Length: 283
Image (cartoon, rainbow, N blue to C red; front, side, top):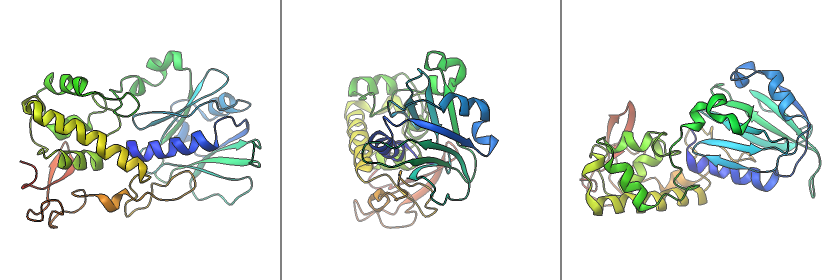
C-alpha cells in the first residue's frame, strides 16, 4: 500500500499539473470505487467544478473544489492517479476519468484513477461534514509532515501509551501516514527494536525516533517514494520511485546489515505485519 512518501509524491504532481483545471466531464466505471456514495454523486459533484488545491492527510489525497466540496482519493493497495492527454489509451482497470479543460501550457487532458484490486476510493464530500461522511478521515492522528510533528508532541504520544513501538507507528489514529515500509526504516534509523514499549524509550530514544521520522520520510519523498517488485505504485506520469534502493532493513531478511556490517536482518511479525530489523543495530 502506498504510504505517506508515495501519496505526497502524487500530491505534488497534482498540485503542479491539476490545480486550477476545470473538470468538463466525468466517467465512472467500476461501482466499487465509489461505494461510499454512488457513481452519480461523484459525477454530479465533480462535473463543472474547478480544482483549487491539492492536499494530503496521512495516506488520503484531498482536492478542494470551487464548489466548496472536496474530492477524497485513497489509493489503498493498488490505486494509481495518472494524467494523460485526452484520447490516450487507458490502462486496464481505469475506473474514474475526469476530463480536464485545457490549461496554460496544456491541452485537454484526462485524470485517471486506476485500481486493479478495487480497494481504493474516490469520493466527493462536504468538508464541514467530514466526521459523518468520511469518519476514518476525521479520526486520523497527527501527520508528521503536514502538521510538523514536534519532539514535544511525539513525547506526549509515546508516554501516554504503553504499546509496542511498531504497532503504534502503524496506528493511523496516532500518527497518520506511516506504514510498514517506513516504520521498519524509521525504527532502524533510530536504533530502536520494534518490540520496545513506547513509554519506556527515555529522552534519548524519543529524540532518536523523532529525528529518524524527519530524516526518513523527507528523504523518501525526495526519491519519489518506494516502488517495489509489483510496480503498482507510480507517480502522476507513471514513473516509479527510487527510495527502495535506500532501504536498509525492509525486505532484506537474511541479508547482512549494511549499517553495521555485522548483524543479519531478521523478520518477525508485529501487528500482523512483517517486521524487519537488525538485532545488533536495534537493541
